Image (cartoon, rainbow over all chains, first blue to last red):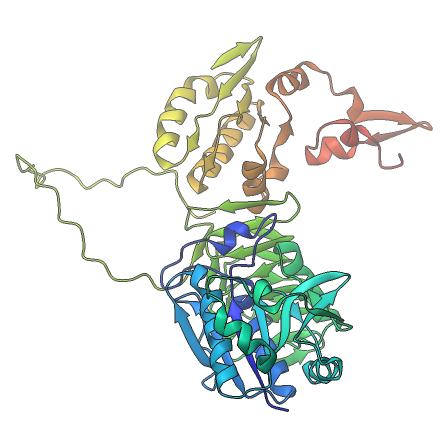
Length: 349
Length: 142
């Protein structure tokens, strides 16, 4: 049985609080979709690809908007970049046609991001035994954006159809397949926190990257906790994360790669996503922080914090030429004036 | 700035940042130099607050308390409340739903702070931590 997979990374990370996360503009990347979100050192895309590989699916095409994948994808994936997120599905249908012409029997088509733990080998077997054109995965009586399509059965309709049609039109009415494994729809920040907690509790198959330095405390390569920093289990400190003096990373918190926790700051039951710097003396609890975006789960709101003393993005800014200095009509003679420090109320908190 | 008896209610501008703070403090300076300055900052129009603004709040509170006065906050929008919590400043201030409640709190003798219960006198949680409202008036035994 020859099978391939098409993974579409769409802007599915929508919901009460993280919808704004999905569309934020960061230098070097255009947004954060559920498929690109990193949990305990691994992206949902990486976890999904690993699961597909376990089902012996080798040819995997990943379709994403150009610049929307904020990490280096595995080499053996066929990465297809499109100009706009709207072009993702037409490109996926085009790829489906390609697989059909190449004689691939079954194609798994999915959109990230929900995180789905499914035995794809078993799903393929069930799909074959039913001899239907398409099967769609379901969880809790709700359909998931995961289909298995028999490429040969679809080829005729595919050749006739325009790429502007949605995948649902092409696949018709698929037969449902109920997923028994763990599913998290990653629709909002609460879902993300739930996934982190479930991973720590072992309710899903996600295991933190790095090594368990103490029971329940995982640390990835290059993590730099200060000797006075405290980490309370279960917690995850990602690659190249810096924990400054007297900072605290408390229960069920994850600090993802290239982030920084300022001196005296407490992170408790919170997620700090990659490339985020937290200032000094903060209390980050029941929250998800990404760049300068702060999702307060207790109040169900998302803040954009402009003050870099509080939280900020650590993605390197592109170089810009300095602004030309303003021309002064009469040059001031400051030779004999005493130097004074400008009074300022702004200081480090 | 409005005066309600001996309590001064000051409405903060939409943006409380580095630029606005200097002017704001200059305006407030005479009030802060009085004896027992009782201040209420009305946050109803505030949509932006940064670390300079938070520093200003702490400075005003410090100045008021030096002269046996106090500073209370009112009508704090949820995003600003979130920011105050993030910076751990929320626990330093009494925060009220509206300015009139904040003004009333100055005029009320804090009898709830001392509560007779079975012959023993208990200091309420609100009096210690600066909490307000009915929850704060309960003694630990309630």
